[in-house]
Length: 126
Image (cartoon, rainbow, N blue to C red; front, side, top):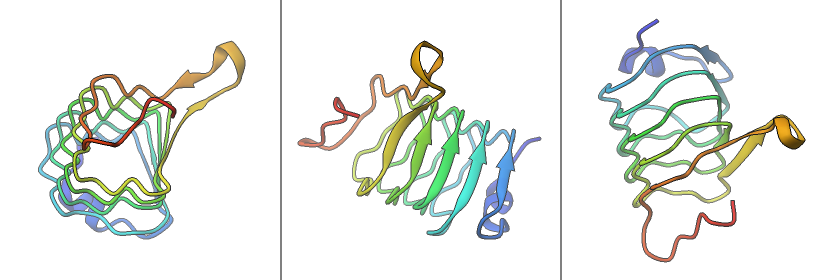
């Protein structure tokens, strides 16, 4: 399924969005603070500047090259997601977690290779 701004804007709090392709979509300033479950969706190269995604749970999502400049990611959770090359400059990362799915050698980690962040922000320990 291909998603757009309306797909996210119309989702009710606590909703689960699965396997939706938002790749390259203009999603600037979309979203809201609160619980949302985002599972196996693609936001590759999507424009999420100034989006409010706080409290959202992203699992197995592709955010490669996504523009998240100035986005609110407060208390968002990223598990087994790919953020390679994502732009997080100016994003609110307070309470955000970047983790894995699975245990031991079978765990799939969240990728943060080449992520752009503001000076002083250290993602090496996550």
